[in-house]
Image (tube, rainbow, N blue to C red):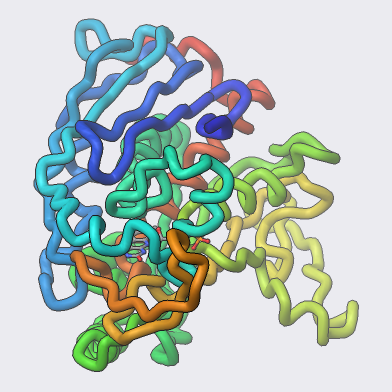
Length: 368
Ligand SMILES: Cc1cc2nc3c(=O)[nH]c(=O)nc-3n(C[C@H](O)[C@H](O)[C@H](O)COP(=O)(O)O)c2cc1C
């Protein structure tokens, strides 16, 4: 199974399965001289799972990060950083009954075809949302490094099912409010309605999807490697690597298709001695390069495949139609847990491009 690494200068390789011993990450190319501790990573791991058991899977793990290499005296050394987290709460019993019954919309069937039945299907194996733990660890490091250059990446929930907040949020509001609500929406009134929608769906044996929005602030102009490593292409690639992501748009995205050029173009204007644009319909990227404006992305997340209702499938042992009732512990909505994964995918990709552009050096200056 190839395809487990992303990035050219800041290269992130993840490993592990949902019900295996560990999940983990190796980061190659992290600049030397970044102050880093297990606590920096733990904060991100702790905020991954909303504390409210009503809206998440019953598999609630206290994940503890083990840093195995790449740190000395509290600083990154420039050598590969390896970090693991144990899988403590895996329960594979519910998967035995459905070994030959692929879940609609989950990876079970295509993975079975691709890996000849050798794949570890327990809990979704390599295709499980649990694998995002490794991405979140890499994201914790990337965000810490980016923050030293005043670059901030903020993801939050914009919609759950049909409940959507159209409020404009300031960066301060997002930072302050997003982890207040279990649904990770900074609009706390709407967050409550999102929660109710998830609880209702779960009671009905249903699941919901939604939209995660992400802002990257203070990214300098000129970052990206057009044509084939353009910044939007690489961000979209990293975002599509998160399980359950089915759409990515930048700026006004699909809505641009219905606009006139005079409405969609972002006029240039000088602000505090800097070239800026008075609107940000393009979402901060033009020609595959950042233009210095906030990068705005929206990510569509599909409803969780494992639903409580009976579904039709095919029994792969007899090749006949069969009915399937999925057991096991599942998220009624993936969106809240996808928020830190989106933030991490964006942070890791931006950092990779900032190093490639020479904006972030491979050895950081020692702070006095
Ligand atoms: C954080 C996270 C948690 C997830 N939890 C579940 C889950 O509990 N049950 C489930 O069926 N799918 C879950 N998924 C979605 C599946 O992993 C995903 O739909 C599946 O691998 C198929 O991939 P695709 O949706 O990208 O095509 C989760 C995804 C993420 C990102």
